[in-house]
Image (cartoon, rainbow, N blue to C red):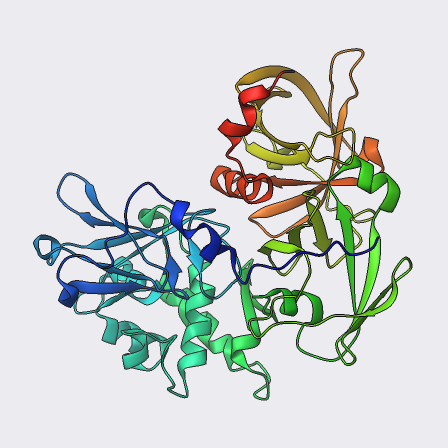
Length: 437
């Protein structure tokens, strides 16, 4: 497949910042002495509210640098920052945040971070939190992203890792102090020659695992060394997929060239922010995959593994009582027709309600050898989905009835809506105006 080329947006946050929310940011209003900053990296378009006896009164959304001004009347209230999947953007990564969580303020701090949230949850001062974790007190209570303190990268890594453990329900945050201590101790076992800004830590089954951090398209394609990297590419569009299938690209960071069977060897380059020059628009990047929109408007999936052969597999616990949102291309030609459907699985019966543009149908389903089959009426093709792999926020499925053509699945409705809009340029409601089954 010849790479389809279009200027790559440096970061989609800048392109869509004006339409993220109907509420105006209050970052430039009110008493600037009460201005606070919401940080994992700097969090843009996080919803901020002030907790009162009866409710959390919405103040507004953070600006692109994570700032918001708090009215004087709320100066003594607990301030809550809601990081919303598909709507909030983190300066640590390209694109939107993939999961929702909540953070809270702490007394005397001009920031809201995983550390202030920890202090609120454990009912401790920030000084006590810093002492318990064995981190620099000034960094724990301040802006560790901007700091040039020699421990700032370490503190930032602990914060990044902790943010992935926070719940969207504050009461769901448990044993945060113990977890942060475990994370900080694990950093001692990382090779001292490595740059902590290039490390991603993941807490899994009580263990802390370290991986290369993927924050930009350059990170996804090259990693942090000169070894050749294999990446797999396919379109969600049936016509393009029939012609191109799943293509293997071999990237050589040492020479900044890539090779695939159709294009041969060709050069590539990045801009200063790690974005590919003169390639497709990137709308999502993660350690596992990257989603792009070429100039002809189809959605393409890049993956670190060959998802045509990979099988993570479905199990009943992933479906019973769960809701999944599916993004696919319904086109029968090379002109894309973005599709958004919601699959709601009954908690007891093997029935699934499929909703698309307000129209619903309920169908039986079964799992065979890890493959999900939704049984459509006679005359229609069954939907047969393999769960290839995922990252906890977004999963990549393949349509077994269409030679493993990819589709995107997520349990986060806001993430699905964001991906759909960034791909199609329309909201789901706008795209549904001419829908018929």
